[in-house]
Amino acid sequence: MPNGNPTPESYVIENLFHIANKAGDDVSFKLNIAQAKLDKQLTGRDVIPKARQEGISSYYLARYAVKCMYKRNTRAVVISHESEATQRMLARVKYFLETMKGNIKPETASYSKNEITFPKTNSMFYIGTAGAKKFGRGDTVTDLHCSEVAFWDNPVDLLGGLFQAVPRTGEIGVESTGNGVGNYYHRLVTRAADGNSRFKLHFFNWQDFPEYTIPLTPEEEDEIMNDLRAEFEETDWKDEDGILHEGIVNKFNLTPGQVAFRREKLEELDFDLHIFKQEYPMTLDECFQETGRSLFQRINYIFTEQWKKVDRYFHVLEGHPIEGRHYLIGADVGGGTGGDLDSKNSCDNSVASIFDLETLEQVGEWVSNNHEPDRFGYKLSELGRSFNNAFITVESNNHGLTTIEALRNGKRSATGAFEHEPYPTFLLYRRARGARRVMDTVDLLASFGYNTNRKSKPYLIGKLRKFAVKMLTIHSTSLLAEMQSYIEHPDGSLGAVDGCKDDRVVAAALAIINSEKVALSTLPQPPNTNNQKMDDPFLLDNMIKRARSSGRFLIPSHTL
Image (cartoon, rainbow, N blue to C red; front, side, top):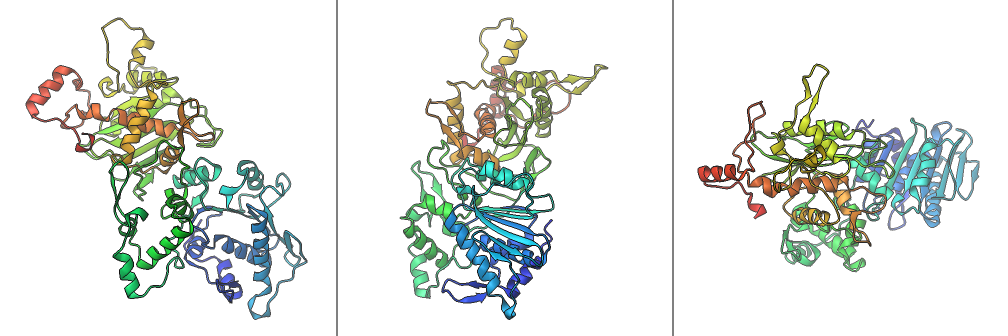
């Protein structure tokens, strides 16, 4: 676990190694800000999305070279995405060893095309290209660094063998700039960001990298700051829907030198903001720019440290639930057959997405793929009660009816006492009822929840698209990732790209679809939580009675 102190390897690097600066001069290898932060926070299972050329690979090369020199039986492996990069990395390691200070030079037995051996410590440093060598049973790798994984052709199969070669006591570092959404690296980073992975996330934006600025005179600084441009998103700007967005200079307090650097890089990239944000991200979500196919082109996502992981299933926004507030829960129901959470081949998740009705801010997300549909219903009942008797909308397709039944009926023990109380039915989304008739159990259950089909799903997702631009505030990185990879397929169906999931998207949409209806209920306080009889707020007589007595409707201004 990280202890916040520099590692022993960093002392050797800074005191014995040289590195070539941009002018080609030999200078002492002093860890830059990104390298020093990573060095202090290493866990042994680390994933590093980053801006270009922040020196993460150089740090790992130097770190493993030091380990090979002093630690017996080190088997260090660095894998890159292309052969040219591999050879550059090998040349860099040789440079570290041959230019050490104090005329110190470690004994090496061979300098092959891909390998350096250290006979005194019986250690080996292998540098290769992704796919060039298969690692598997019988191989032992003590230290593994995978560079630019987002650009590997087949990372799932390659990393499967590589990771299995590293024991629990070994070290794995995975690093890359972004390369779109829905791929292995995107999924790996998303799981780490939400705390659903053994890997720890380390994100380094370009603003904190001291080299990413241009020295300016006071006159040049004034000229830049007096000529901020909306077309570069430097100052406040409006999108095609007329929605105002805060400019990046004020939002991140960029210096004039950083603005000049950003303009220089934009010009090199033909002023393509999409590519710039991926190559030089300011926030984690900018690392993974969708390719234009996503239905959610604009998402009001805000990272916050208040988005806390409560347990293996549940994230909640610190401070919620708040007394007197109303909450919405959307529930997408999976089969509950298990598997690695959010992995490519696991079953669908059951997801409860929770929003504050008054602000439409995401305040909770509960996710599991090993809760059976009825058990998920009992959990929904628990969540609903804890969030001030929240209004719940369940997707009624497939396993959904079992979840709805568990919500409506609860669960009794062998003695007849309730282990799980029934959830008040008027707090469950129910489609408009037609003429009264005798219904069997299935018909009755099917009258609750939202049935998604080819006709209703576009409307459901369309609502979420509209709200996601400005009205909603999203905090879940996993929900953001699913929205970024949610597309319209060639056959016209809506869903995730291959290899991704969309359970969180559907759950969020189900919560929002009920927001306007619930807002019309005009409840001055959340429903009581005791066993007193509760009046159905959606009966027409009750709505008229409350409207006359209060003289107002509880309709948030942002829904008008």
